[in-house]
Length: 208
Image (cartoon, rainbow, N blue to C red; front, side, top):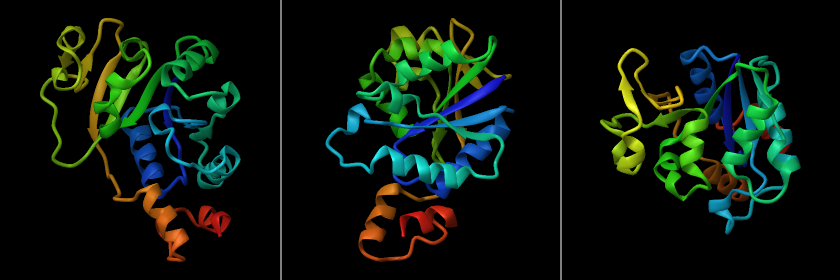
């Protein structure tokens, strides 16, 4: 089994999230993408977010009908701040033997990874899929990782990724990144402006 783990606040989930998930599913021949709404993101504690229940309900509406997409409430059930290292360990412990995990994150988040809890261990536990913007290219991991850790990852031209000592890899992939943000959607809702074609219609109806 090959599972993609896609975390975030999803406040609200939008078409950009869904399109990126669909492309990653195809690119890496994954069996499923698991959306994992955060309870409290450690680096965004100063921001007010919608209650977990509403964000989870919008995700359920957004992925309805796609058998390859599912949702996990693991971070909400765990309580406290939502640390990625704890989430990945949860899936390692609760997945069928031999399951490959692909941790999905954006380019900006990847550049902040040294601020994450136990980030060096996280880099060894699973594959990373970094969603990059058009025109972005990384020549070496030392641009983001400290040299001592970056040196442990070697570029594999066959897989087009950086393979680490545990056999996991870090992949950079250019996707159809729709210029949509959850912040802009919330601002539009507050201003009574249309959010049609930014979110799935069932999510728009839920928000209304």
